[in-house]
Amino acid sequence: MLLSQLLTPQRIRIPLAAGDKPAALRELVGIVAPDDLMAAADLLLAVEEREAVLSTGIGHGVAIPHGRSGRVNDVRVSAGVTAVPIEFGSLDGSPVRLFFLLVGPASEAGTHVRALSRISRLVRQPLVRERLVRATTSDEFHRRLREAEGA
Image (cartoon, one colour):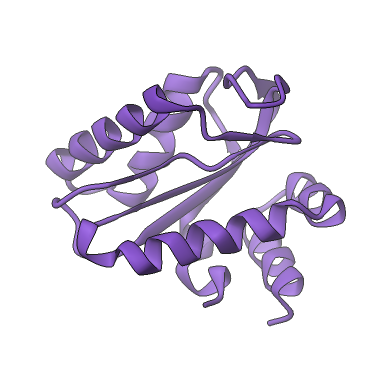
């Protein structure tokens, strides 16, 4: 599975306007459900419930908020970079600039887990993180993601 196939440039926002964790989650969810307020509300609740269990700020300035909802029938990914790092309750205590949001239905659990794993493996690489954070457009971010995946 290639993340760059799930994540289109239209679902990448640079810069994210959010200045705090709740705003970042709302903005990222709004990207994957722009025309469906009911789905967006349900997805946001699912993501917030997951965050309440344990922060998805995985360290090194990266967060991968995720959740599942019956309001969508496919796996959706959005991403973004904030201009200024925001506090996210990350496991290593560092603020976050690089975000990947992953949502989908419970019926797509396998795809969901594979996508989470793919994102985690990619962002563990310091050079990949740096290149994604330094991207100035969604097209550049997507291109750098494809390069990192060897696509």
